[in-house]
Image 1: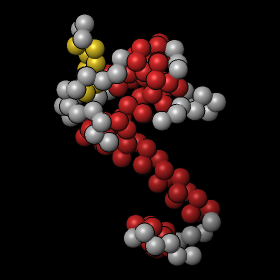
Image 2: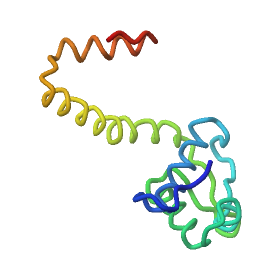
Image 3: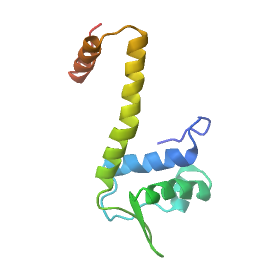
Length: 126
């Protein structure tokens, strides 16, 4: 993954989201040690303090936990917490944006549901 250094999303947020994706994809399991801030800094060519800030977000959310002198590890229920957070925050926000846009375009609730069902089935109809 490449970070978007010119985008509006802060790099430390991108680091935390990347780490979440790694956990969701099964690249890091419960109680497994994750990359250190210095390893992340080297991987992404960023300042170690920026990497630490991204990791600390996940530690504050208890997705990661610290073992003094050993580093950070994935919490037992990290995957469930990430899924819940993304459903309740990210997905909800995106759905709200879609509904608002549908209202602006005078798309009915039924039309919107049909569009979702069509995409869900992997067939796009226009």
